[in-house]
Image (tube, rainbow, N blue to C red):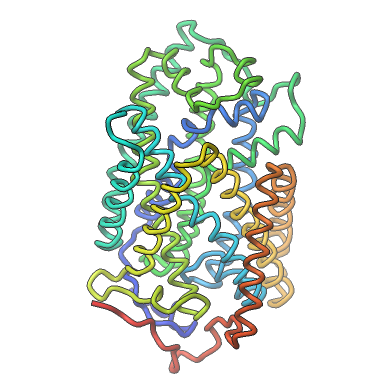
Length: 470
């Protein structure tokens, strides 16, 4: 099919990555990135932060990111390229702003694999104490790097296997959990969605800023725009589908777990420093065996498939920015045999391992990484909404004001409130990262490397392709 290739050529690029991903592969990729059982790891933190309204926090997260997915769909149709928000903001508003957006989302993508590896390694060490955390870290990083270096088809096959395993564990929990509720282990209540005794918008939005961690990854599908057989149309459909399915699964499992939580008030007051609140609910549902199954499944999910697709996403972002000469050129090299940006993949692996090992030495390592990740992604999403308005309404004079003005405005407003009510430490560290990106941007200007994006060269004069390696 030539259409996706022509999409790419009109922006002055050549097709280098392999178009091998079908819609169902993209959907599986997005679901794996979000992890269908992701709430199991942070259930207690969100429950405590929301005053028990854990379902309400996830519901707001779904609503906010539905608007974000819609804005992604508008921009991926206009610019069907790898690089996601970096390309969309850069081409919709301007290359310098796109660099800042790419820098912001990079905070999310660079740190997410490190967090996933560390959480999984700590969990597996708790299950098998004889194997130290650092060895689990090395094992997870090595396994994912090898699979990703083998090509996008290998990654797609592996993610399908892991996705099926996660869904099996999730439905086992839901089945035993619902049966336990029916037989009297808990009482049905609307309080996980709305509790008049604890409700407050600042409280709920603050908890949403934590719950959003579970959703991050649906946007990673856009990183595969140059590897999707159906081009931009398939990307938009997959993003919406993955977000919808994940939202339903997140709400279902947290509602059941909230009902089965033995002492909700204690969890609200004391929090969940050990991260075991969900597994306690699973034990109430059917005993220690179910708690162990959920704990091990969560560790494997975070350490293998989720961190694997996270590595894919950041490597494509680095590839796209390097291809435009905004990062070192060696990151734009593509393996001729596997059609993947191998140098970028290996760099991400090295950074993830180094950060994971360092954060493991800190008592607040996991908390620190978590606080930083969401801020970068939400900031980039805000710029994405702005790019829809600037590109379609201001530059293209679009008359579709619902899709190109109202929808992005609503999405940006909701995200703005979430960011405003986020953890103060996350806000401060996030702004430091953005400030560092601005300094790098200034350095590029001073060095005569002003950010520029290909796209205006005619098809007959394509940009020089990225170099390939054997």
